[in-house]
Image 1: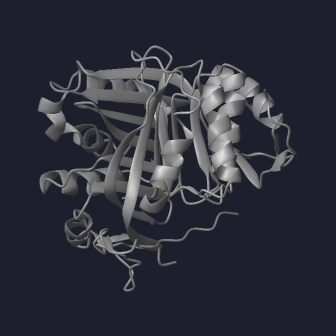
Image 2: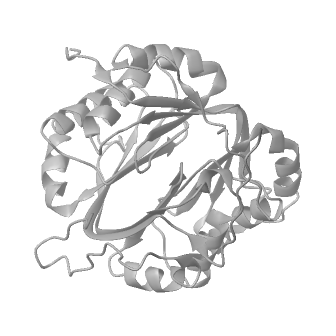
Image 3: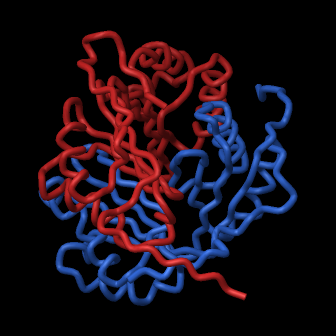
Length: 171
Length: 186
């Protein structure tokens, strides 16, 4: 039976542009190669907007998101890497949806999970950070996700786009 | 008009760097038909006042997701007790809670981490070279979280201090978890 409660007021929502999700699952005998993908992306000066690394059984699963503009280059490099080519999977057209603040409250996470589960929307990745809860979803699901979440949350009327007005040029 | 600001880093700059010990990492693999129910259970725990240190999740094949919840070790039992009541008692199901405890976490945040390249490579490659086992790591927004086995945080801090400008006062609580539990020094 669905719990009845007042909608939760959320301070802010951020939505990214379309991203490329790269998922690498390495078996335990290749665990020392976990950072390999980071070196490839760093050498190409490709920032990662999101990253999770997790051990599941004996496998190490790395999932990261980069701007979609880097897709061609990232695919070429990873698919030509002797270690990564057999263990990498690419999902273009994903989006990073962040809600804040969470205030370390399980209620906010629980309600988000409930909302997205109820709408039958697959969550590709998720992470909390200092203030935000960030979901990686398929871009085509974004509108439905916002509709599903708005059933339980009060959003500000002007969601901010993740690409900031500050451009970082790194040398 | 454009404003340009330039700064140089001899070491990676951070705005905050904290270490917390005496934590538990709980994990579930949840089927797509269970996600709504899990959401409600987390909501109930939240309404009872339970808080998290970190949460992460990722797809686990066949429509399932793996959820990792990091919380204070003293709350582990109460949280775990909350779940068996609602789980279907299917012996084939891997939707049971698993625990790694005690664990420690290092987390820090800094300027424009999400806009810059090379940060994860700097941190994670260094830990990998020194054989520090990272159980779980996330980089989201400008924050980096590293979940480590018991008594590994000190070693990791030593390694990272060569690469990262760690503020002089680090929030630390690296007590032996067999003593009364640690807390985050804000």
